[in-house]
Each structure stands twice: as C-alpha cells, then as structure tokens.
Image 1 (cartoon, rainbow, N blue to C red):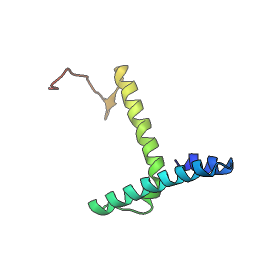
Image 2: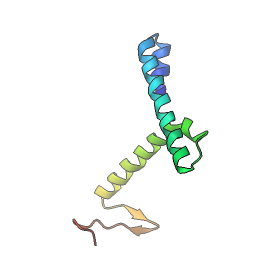
Image 3: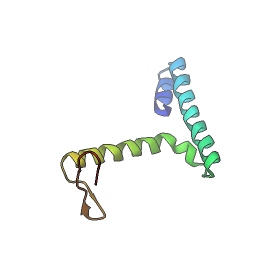
Length: 87
C-alpha cells in the first residue's frame, strides 16, 4: 500500500493515492494495537509493517519450495515430510 500510494500520488491519481496511504495507516494502526495489547514494542516496528509482511511472505514461499523439492532442513538436519497425523 505505501508503494501504491506514492506511485499513484506521483502519477496524479489522488483517490488511488489516498486509498493506498489509508491502507498503510490501517496496517500500522493494527500493529500498534497488537503491540500494546501484548506488551510488545509499538514504535518504530509498526512503521515497517509492509516490509515485515513482505519478508514473511518470502520466507513462507521459500519454505514451500524447499519442502516440495525435499530439500528443507532445520539446524543442519533434513525435515522429513510425514503423512496426516504427523508422528
């Protein structure tokens, strides 16, 4: 949303810019509320919310990709896929 908002503002598309910046503000507000409710640090962490979401998505994608290739490991040990029920 912040990139969308800035790009739209540069292109003169005010309604789209406002929508992007409002979406960013709502994401930041959500992070602040969650941090305060759990005793976490609200600032400046909340301002980096889009970056942290992007990094998390990249880590999840990498994990799925490695899992499909049976190349997933943790602390140097292979993670073996098991059927339903684990164990």
